[in-house]
Length: 361
Image (cartoon, rainbow, N blue to C red; front, side):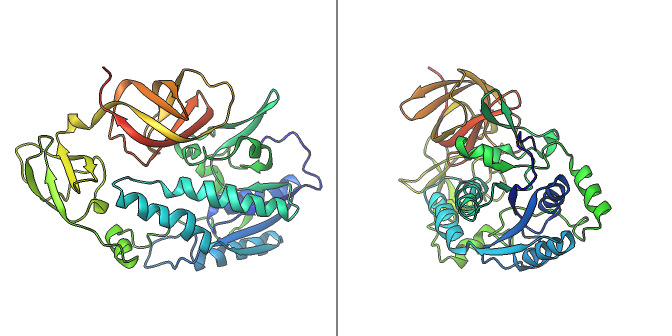
């Protein structure tokens, strides 16, 4: 949280999921002197079983209770239709095309830092704040999105869609804290969510079972062939939507060596499998770009999955896309997922993986 303006009189709307991170974000902002109002996006999702959801009914009650403890207002905005329109429909559509989307990226793009940020500004708030582990700082005349101090909690991979011009109006109060620090602050303040477990997986897939989710949305999965790279049929699959690049278990195919899902042939409705070494590729094509700097270097660190370390790569512009070639081949590059570009601790931007480059000629 490195804003040059003094907080006195500045109004901030804090997106509160009912978890410890967003609760401590609100706490820190109030302690810093901001006029804090909490808001929870009601996404129309019901929490099931023992799973912790970031947007169910219990989450709204937890956020409301924290705001009561902090003595700040709390609002609930209905974003259920926006979630369905911009995130869930795309999630289903992408899977039907044999791609693997990242709904958390789309939620940030369209809901939190799209509709909610616009609503905050329309209501006269100076800032929107969230409990993400990231930093925004002004370096020279430009605002930069940066990795947090706690690299194990770095969430910048999901934040690259934020528009460059919106950076000055966003606050990330947890950027200089570890998760242990956050829980300690919550316990010290007596917040009842101090020991609350973190939300897991995708919030609208409430059981964690993709098959049940798709069936609940009346999505028809079409069975087809599992083939090797030469096209020889090895078995049958139950629908491309139930498989992901790099998957090994659950294929139902016996072979001398372990087999992995390499890619999907949407035209023939085939799942193509091969050996582990066949998962490695030289690069990718990225589209739907959002760039956070005008000075984009040819060599960057690129991250193709949230839990994967950034890898050195060179970039070449090809129209509105980037051709990304890695210094070392990368495993399981997956169309539909995000690729995010870094220079040391700075997020340069990112895009959606459109195609895989198997080898460089």
